[in-house]
Image (cartoon, rainbow, N blue to C red; front, side):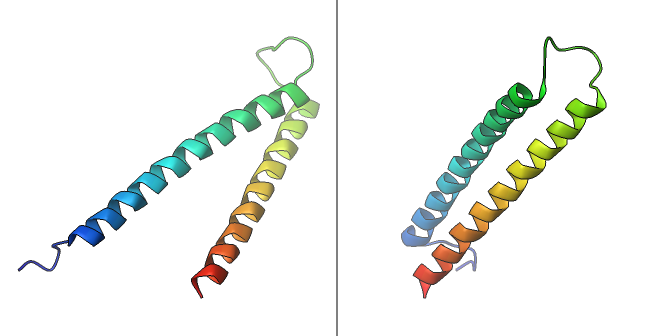
Length: 87
């Protein structure tokens, strides 16, 4: 018997894990799309041009930083909740 054979329970767990990963990827992509819309709406004034001025660039950087910080904070909190539930 090969050491890599999976029983039906392990196959179900692997399938569930794959489904969860795909779901997380889709949610992440939706978040990126949403934050792009929000940041562009917040930071871009007037009609788009071929060049971004320093004020708009600073606004976009700040908006992206807040998005990343918020996402990391939520992810860390979720991880803590899962770890507490596992114990």
